Amino acid sequence: MNGHVPDAIQQPPWQPSDGPEPAVHVYPHRKLPALDIRINGAWHPARAIARQHWADGSLVYQVDVAPQPGYTIHRSYRWPQPGLRRAPHRDSPTSPVGEDEPMTITMKNYGLTWTDPDGTKRASAVAYDEIVPVKPGELPEPKA
View 1: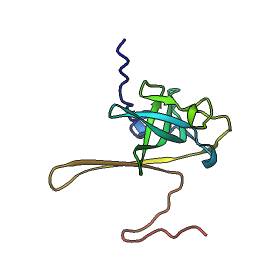
View 2 (view 1 turned 90 degrees about the vertical axis):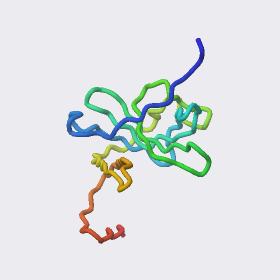
View 3 (view 1 turned 120 degrees about the vertical axis):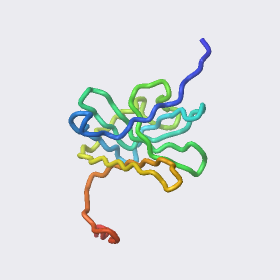
View 4 (view 1 turned 30 degrees about the vertical axis):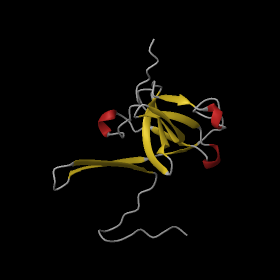
């Protein structure tokens, strides 16, 4: 056995063709389960922000991962896979699911793809638990 662990594979955002929208459980900020994510051949610390329960029975974790000091990215990964592991050594629960019952919300996922003028293909995805309609050029008003 050579001990090689492949990098974690990101989970694309949910789409209607995937079936019913997943139920989303958001973790309390003070109790974010710790994970390690393998990116570019190295393990990096991550905190699970939310857990998605997909209709096919699979779990997807939305995480903030720090692939380098001072730089955090938001990604989603299907659990389990070799490039993800629990990180109990960082003061986390023994399971990424956590011991406290998280809040349940319904999230809407949106994705955009475009091609830059130089031909570079781009993509972006985001999930929201509340939609605030705005017109082009307007900014939403902050909640009081």
